[in-house]
Image 1 (cartoon, helix red, strand yellow):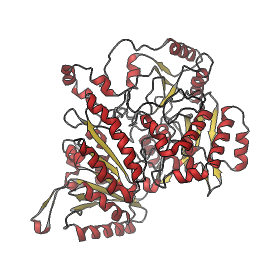
Image 2: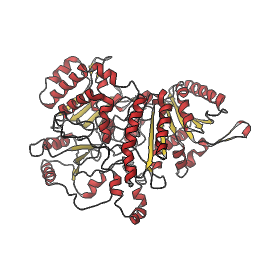
Image 3: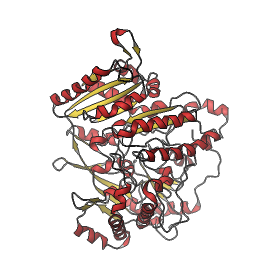
Amino acid sequence: MIPRISHSENTPQIVQSFLAKLRNSNFSGDIQHDYASRLVTATDNSIYQVLPQAVVFPKNYKEIQAVLKIADQQQFRHSIKITPRGGGTGTNGQSLTEGIVLDCSRYMNRILETNLKEGWVRVEPGVVLDQLNEHLAQKNVFFAPDLSPSNRATLGGMVNTDACGKGSRIYGRTSDHVLELSCILSNGEVLESVPLDTEKLNSYKRKSGITGEVFKVVDRVVLEKADLIEEVFPKMNRFMTGYNLAKVYSNAEKKFNLNYLLSGSEGTLAIVSEAKLRLTALPKHKLLLVVKYEDFDDALRDAEILLENDPAAIETIDEKILSLAKEDEIYLKIKDFIADESGKSGKKFRPTRTISLIEFCGNNRKNLEKQVSALCKIIDAKKNKSGEATGYYRTSDPQEIKDLWSLRKKGVGLLGNTKGERKPLPFVEDTAVPPENLAGYIREFRKLLESYGLEYAMFGHVDVGCLHVRPALDLKNPDEEAWIRELSDKVVTLVKKYGGVMWSEHGRGFRSEYTADFFGKELHQDLRRIKEAFDPDNRLNPGKIVTPLSKNADKVVPLEGPLRGHKDRQIAPVLLKEYESAINCNGNGACFDYLPANVMCPSS
């Protein structure tokens, strides 16, 4: 629920002056500062709620330039702050701001050029992932990074969080598919980011303005701190994002590639106005194996064995989501595939409390069948033993595969239907550890949550060591609100113990204060130097990731909020009951769908 608490949250005069000047600059997009428009962009899929001062919807890159050039004028330089927003599906408040939201999804949503011969596509940042892949499907290619909210996640948002999901073990992250980025810097300069050889890099370093400073500072940091970067950054598929220093230089190609730094920067360095993306050939065949377990830990222990058969993806879903799915329309489509098993001679009942979806993709059907058969043989040999898989369902039917993956995609929406005041919430949701450490890590994670008497849901990408963990809390209760800090601090300690990272998929946002815990104090200062080079006035999404080195008075956003619970607890109990459906909106963004004929609500 997003209540209106008072009438005192008017747009400040300096912002109104800025918007008036923007309006008079031939800006043809939409400029909105009414309360309703601001309120719509005050939330995302996180636990936070921050009311912006206004929302602007540019129609092209020149209008993004206009926004930033006017913001750089002396009268506005220290007052106007700009934060880009995509589909609003972020789980950590990355796009929430007290400043001005810049939303490219309304107008800058065009697929500009497709080059099948060279294998790339050029898009504006407001293009939605499913929109792009539907456009490409008839051409037998696709943009490979896959997300659960694929029907509303924008490509600009994916670049800004370096997003990834199912299949990342073989396809990597968004940044692995970025060829070029067109960006607008904080003063309105245009930056074209492409991989550079030494000669071209030196020419960029000689440029005037922010552009030249950016290349000089980043080049110096990644060269001078190469050994420290090698030591600090984990060698994981889910590598550390948010100023990814480890991949700026490619030893293989001998190129300097700023795209890896910009990807995952959450709009703190520049505004992406266009992206050239690598395309991947669609696999001709897919096979899916649904492996069933009595216990979640059994599934995690099995992951290493399953990986030996080289699947494209392994996604595990716990009992909480399977139970909630029984009340959803999807259950009628998949119930036979996840049915309980009877044991040896049909005498022992073995309930399905966890499943792993294991997908195999490729162009050689016979080879895929061999892979799946080999895995089935392993499962058959052990399935009557305690602690092992109880059975499986095997399919190559496209509709069955689609329905089963729909269950996984619906996970977050289903959790929003949890009964009671406590709801599963994202704040320690996308930690990752090396896959071989996952079972031990999750065992300790569960003990931690259970020591607080909390229920929780777990689902996600066991093949890359990333599980989405959502503890159920009632943030209207101040005592439980305090657990956000307690649990987050303890999870940071735990994930470091197992050699992992706190953010492996969804960006940093309101968790930015933990940056130094993973980069170390020295590299943390270097990140601030880089922020200073790009954005010396701390204009772009201030408070996220780091602050500029010279702005010691500026702080990153606090983990504690402002939280939605601060507002929700002020709503009268009778209204809480009367507007229960609205209260239960989890911000998952299913109402933000690029297809106008699709059902808008609820977010499931």
